[in-house]
Every structure is written in structure tokens, then in C-alpha cells.
Image (cartoon, rainbow, N blue to C red; front, side, top):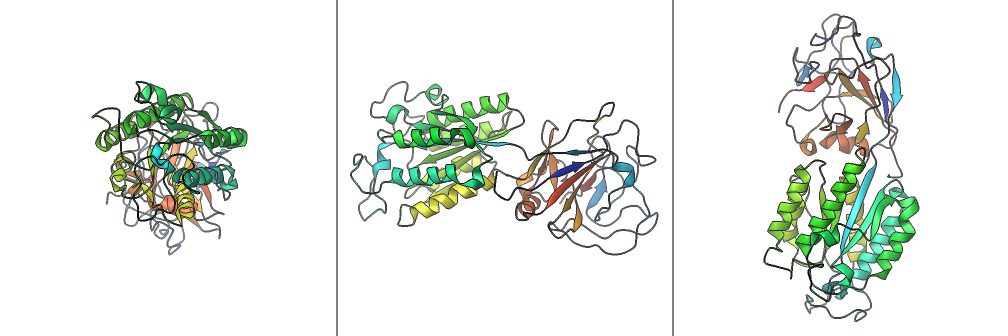
Length: 412
């Protein structure tokens, strides 16, 4: 994880028949001081209401046990409700695993910084003092040894298979790239193996974009299915558009494959890293692989390529939502988790406590302002601007209360 990991705290009561008169589908009422406590990082809070008036204000509804949202309109900074805080459990941010699929085609031998002569064909290994692959290699090795990434799981594959040079069925088969050069594993144990694999590559050959991306996504999906508590993503780095294999080896088809992986189960996002000139077409793959939430990270081959590539890798790490997904702890013995009886509080580094509203159904989390359940209801995802605010505050804490009727934002 990043060096500045949040310490998320999930505190709550998972009820079977508790929470007094504030049961399923009822309004939530309590005595409260009139007035302010205004504001939070997402703009989703309003003031506390007066005695026996419940929770009121614009932009919020009280959810029912099914999470559909019913009851009074309202909004507000939350106090910890004594009826909803009998049992506590700690939670950890979800493990994030990145599978890198790296271009080692012949054009990765081209010069950096690029001069007036365009370079799309293989000039040969060692032709220039610094090549595109030299830049990629350096940035990847820095990423691997960066303490901010110590909590990540990382694996790697390369394309074309074996450094290319001979176009054959294996080079153009997705099955070839579904087997990694280095399996995904914690950087604490895989860093030296990853570094050795990166150093061993000799760029050569054409660009089998479609089969290499398809194989990488197949492997990531299988890994995610075998590790259901992890969040898994593919980072696809290339310096050119598809060449060779067949007429089906196109950016459009690669984008279709990335889109299918994103909407699949488990969902596997694709983050695209372009290293070279004139690669804006790669945005199609990045958009499809993130449900239009991200564009490709494009690094021009200029004098600052190494620095820009390192920045892009750091941005990809944060885009995967490190620090914004939390596991829900198991229910205490004899108690039942009820999705509509959950509230989320955020305490910033200055001790200010504010509510985080559940985004309405069908809201795109990347564009939201609150939180959502994961599809399997085992995790809580902070969305959009709320995720940004939490990641920017190294001293913040998250608390989730179970047994209190869910506060759902009104549709925007």
C-alpha cells in the first residue's frame, strides 16, 4: 500500500432484532442540539436537527433494510448512536494486485529522447544509449522498490512471447500470455524475481495487442476468482499500435476485450500506459477498461520521459483506488448483516466527524460522492470525490455503523 495508509475502523452492531424502535424501514429520531456542524469533504452533510425531529435537510433519505431507500428526506453530520454501537471490529483496506503486461517489441529499441527522425521499426538492441525500453525498465524497477508500493501484489508478463522475432501461432495466441513470466505476489517476496525478469528482456518483433491483452486479462480474472477478497487490475504498457498476427489485431477489438473484462465477474479494470508519440488511439482501450473513468497515461519520448513515466505509474497506483475499499467484518455469532441498516462516518485528521451518504442505486462510483457496496456485499467502496478526500488525508479514519438505518443521497 501507500506509505500513508489510512487506519480504517469499522465499528458496528450487526443486529438480529435490535435497535429499539428504529427498526427496519422506520424513521430515525433522536434528541439533538439545534444548529450547525456544517460541511465535509464531499459536501454531503447538513446540520443536526432539533429535539425529536429526526434527521432532516436536503439531499438524503433514510434507507430500508433492502437498501432501496425510503422514509424522510434529510442530511446531517452523525453522532454515534448509542443503540447502534454495541459491537466493534477492525477492517483492513482491500489487497490490491497489479498484473503488468509490458511491450518488448522491436520499436522499444528506439531512441529517447527522440530526434527528428521517426522510429517505428526496430533499430536493433543497443543502437542508442537510451531506448524506450531502458526508460520503461528503469521506471518499473523504481516502482517495485518504492516503499509506497510495499503493500501491493505485483506480477508481470511481456509481449511478444520470447522477445518476438518469429511470428507464429504461440505469439498470436491469448493462451500464451495467460501464463505470466512472474506470478502475482507481494512485492516483499517477488521484487528480486520481477527485477530479474525485466532485465532479461531483449526487445524484438511486432505488436500482438489483442492476444497479449486478452491473455493478461484472462490471467488477472483467474487470479481474482482464486483470491476473491483482492482487487485485481491489469496495467498494459505499449509504445505502438497493433501490428502483425491477423486483421483482428486492432485497437477497436482490444477495447472490446477490455470492456468485457471490466463488466465481467470478477470485474478487471485495464489501465493503459503509452510510451511513444501519437498514441491517443490507446484512449479507446483505457476508456473501455474503466467504464469511461480513465484515459490512457501517455508519456512522450522526450528528455523528461523517465520522470513522466514514473509519475504515470504512481497515478495508476492511486487510480486503482488504494485506500478506498474496505472489507466488512464477519457478523458476530447469532447476528445477521442487514444492508439497509448501515451508516458510514469519516473522521478527518483534525477530528471532525461527518457522515458519508450512500450513493443512490445505479450511480457510477467513479462519479459519485459517497459510498457503495461491492456487488457481492462484502466490501464498502468510497466513491469519486469522497475517495479523493480520504486518500488526501493521511490521518483520517473510517467508521461503519451497523444497525442504524442507512442514509442514502437523493438522486442527482
